[in-house]
Length: 154
Image (tube, rainbow, N blue to C red):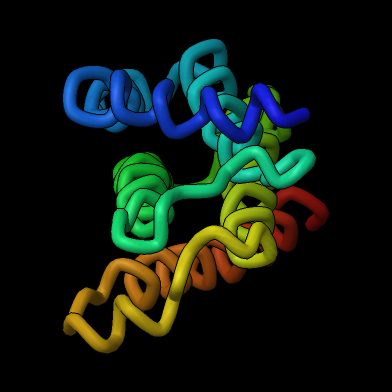
């Protein structure tokens, strides 16, 4: 357990600048391929879950905020594409194409909100709208789900 706490900041430092933007670009490019989207979104969900308190950064380092911003950017890229689309076409697997990804997005943000590694008040303090944007987007996706379900059930 102690090893995870020491290694997570090191892994984050290695991945932050070079690798994390690739996840957002992957979701922006292959938003309609569940094999890609679910894998990337589950990666974010695993990262967001603060198992055994592994995510702990030095108090002077805003790692939790940076981590949340990267996750939010990926979720926002994916969610915007979904909102631009209508309901899933008849005969296609709506769970695989829409519901699973939206569920993982909701779970990821819920885990980040309860993970105790992000000072969410600092976003407001610095005028950063990331939290507001991702919560608004997830609200729109949840409302869209109910619209899709009505279409599907009728």
